[in-house]
Length: 625
Image 1 (tube, one colour):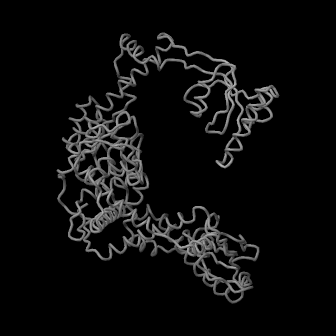
Image 2 (cartoon, helix red, strand yellow; image 1 turned 180 degrees about the vertical axis):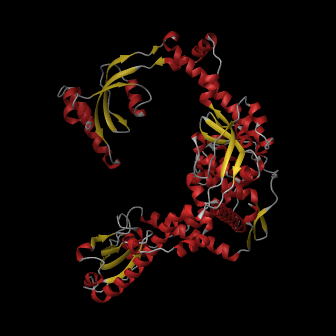
Image 3 (cartoon, one colour; image 1 turned 180 degrees about the horizontal axis):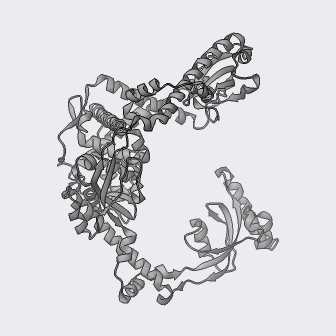
């Protein structure tokens, strides 16, 4: 959840305090840090226990981040990733503390106050803050301690990254290498072309099956019982009566107001570059003076002088302008202008403009009868919004407090418990095809421990709590069923081996005889040699393995070729001939220092983390996650 808050914040390290924000620190409970939960340690870092709960929270964040891909990566990979992330955070916090970094209480309070999900009408709201944390099952003091740690870690990271610097010579060398070009010639030995030559015996098939049985299992399955809190369904069920709808109309009349529109014409002198500002201003003032002096009509000037070519064809007519759809400065000028009177030059987001309002259509209040159907729809939605927010909080709380049964939660929100068909980790049905719901259905909490899931927000208008209703274990597929799959695997492996063997033979011969060796190899003719010419490190359409290898090859001697290979992920073997190297321009760009500093900063941080891990005592206990 902390990462969700990260994404909504405006930048916790770089924020600026415009005015004094007075927030009673007592409301944050900063001095009373204590949180329940599992006492198991997922790791011990320099003698400090890392609670399994922290890693589980990071694991949930990663699953949500990766979505459908999470099921493909597998639980073990995700757990390793989550454990390493949390260990790194602990190491950073320990090092930051050792170096004297610390986020103050005021820093924490200000950062929390600036998070939009804790605000109401643009201001921090204590009740909203407490309600949000409660809905996420988070202890306030624990959250604030995590916030303090995160801010402190951020200070330390920023200190490492911003102190990284580069000399002019380093930046010039960086630019030279970054812009370097290399001329290549290539020939690719296609692995797939060797598949017809690969023969597979029954013994090979049986051996592969016996050695790789875990590859040939059915997917474990689960049926889930679930409560679907759906705003649209709630809206349809909202009871309505004439008096209630009419009262809603009276209270929200401004919603049913046809806004004032102004038929407008303009002349635009665009400013694409701030350096052009003075020239554009001078030009618009000259046009304005000519119109005022009668040297040109507005229409003539619009046709000949305006940079807005679309409206120039209609003598400057923009059309009807209403508030909320245009550049704010343009709207302000339009609604301040008198009808049929030319405005003085106005600076807008597009440049400098002359504006003339041709006519005005006054705002019109639509009658209740005319908009009754829309009012009823809006009323239902407004009431459903309240029911949805209240229901989500109740559903979350009751499902958590009585985690062994969905019945009490369904009763609390007056909902029906539904049941799915069979789901796998990669395939669901209907709303249950959502990756977040599949991940929850197969989470340890639901699948292994038999508990209700947390409240899962599918969208802004739908939330679901689920639990396991039935399970089907993974079973071994019989050999006959998977035999075609094994044959395909073995043919691919054999074809790759042949491609590698033939590729190595060709590469050895080309180093002696050049491309003349291609004809003798029987793999192809000279016409099959690719000649992409000069390529750069980025922007090439060649396989990334080939590009990466090409830029590690030594510079060839004059009129000679340097040879190497690039093996692609699909098993194709590319013979690479490097013909020439052309160093790039070392001219420093405006952002060169920042760009190189960012690269250096990232390296500094990576190096610091490697050093911290190497010098630290770390015990990992993934079995406790």
